Image (cartoon, rainbow, N blue to C red; front, top):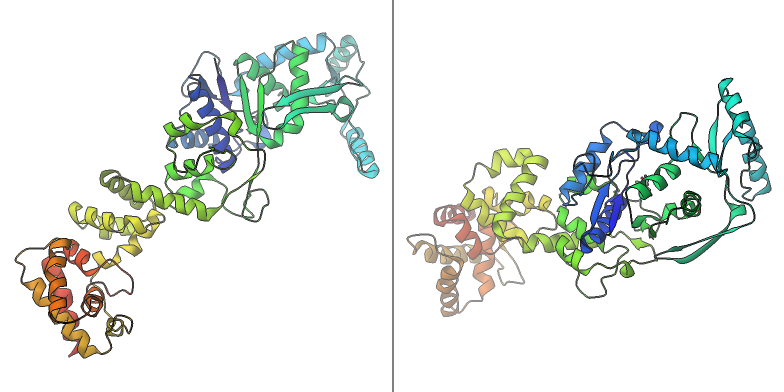
Amino acid sequence: MTRTRFAPSPTGQLHIGGLRTALFAYIWAKKNHGQFLVRIEDTDKTREVEGATDALLDSLELFGIHPDESIRAGGDYGPYIQSERLPLYREHLEKLIEQGDAYYCFTTEEELEAHKKKAEEAGIMIPFRSPYRDITIDEAKAKIAAGEKYVVRMKIPKGETITFFDGLKGKISVPSADIDDQVLLKTDGFPTYHLAMAVDDHLMKITHVLRGDEWLPSTPKHVLLYRMFGWEAPEFYHLSVILGADRKKLSKRNGDTHVSQFLEKWYLKEALLNYIALIGWNSKTTQEIFSLPELIEAFSLEGLQIANGIFDPEKLKWMNSKYIAAMPADELMKTLSDYLKQYNPDFYENTFITHDEVFNRAVITEVQKRCETLADFPALSECFYQEPEVDTALLLSEKMGVTSLEQAKEALQFGLDIIKSFTSTPSRDQLKDAIIPKIAEAGKKNGQILWPLRVALTGKEFSPGAFEMTEILGLEKAIVRIEKVIAKIQ
Ligand code: GLU
């Protein structure tokens, strides 16, 4: 049974890289009809941020990454938060101490500093080997009883090569001489990440560990821990790094990093999820738009890429625009009003809900293909909601063959007469069929009539056309707008 996990530390909001790790782990479990769990790794109390656990879980839910097991969903392998599993770590640590694979260490801060300095001066990595490596358990217990502060360290074997496989990078070998005697239990009585993670992944029956590349250097220690416990290690997949446009690791210095920052910029969660899946994973097809079920279908661990991926905001925008363009009207209306309510309450209250739903729906359907994000909606739809203050100079266009205001006025009157011949609002096609042949009959070019007409209806250099505007605005409003501009020219 495939079991994967996402193991965030509650130190802040969900990062783009974290979302991708969670996504791949989730997809792999789902693809194999297995389980995906979320484990909160809160053993570093100094870095914990209040509310972060809830925010992380909420974010995953929002993106449709629903854990089968978590502090919220429950499960048979809990608790799913490390601070509630301390007795388990203690128990396993005792075992390591008893079998001589870990030891109590009483090294002082000064001694550790001196070691660090020595390595810095030498300009090489000198692995830390404590003078207490061979202390007996009884000696150590006597020191502890006397109130001495201690940590528990891993006893890294001497003169060995630690070998393991990474699903992306292949066989990796590290001499044990390059590995520190890693702290497993800190002075505050909490386990380090390394101990807690190894114990938990085993007890929670994790089969595949998908995690950030930054954990690759720690993996030899994890592999050794598994060996010391006599357990089989899970398969490891260290995901490539996500780089910013400047090819440096994505961070707040070169762009947005938190998932929430993208949502605040009105990116659709489906588009964001789709986009990040393509960073570091190659679908090996030309398909780029994937729903979550399609990702589950198409995903393979072999498609994970070793090369670091670049987060390109322009590509994300493009993808977002594709999602908006393809959204069915009902969903679009719902999503748009949710976004407006949350991120532009002024427009929502004073413009959007003061118009009827049929009108709003017609407007968004008209402009949806031009929205890169839904944040573009208020600007793109302005010509529908507000009567424009038309600058008559815009009525002229050499390219369209409109060279004088008099000519523009005649064109407007020409269009107006045809529009007025309708007793109710014409559809765009009806209006087109009425106007185009008449323009030809009058020996004019389409642009000579349609350009001034469109500008009179919208006041904009770029906007939907005169037929669309009339259909959506309705006969009355369209007539008022055109008449006002004609009056302005006298
Ligand atoms: N708690 C670690 C982190 O937040 C998880 C690393 C892992 O997945 O093993 O990066």
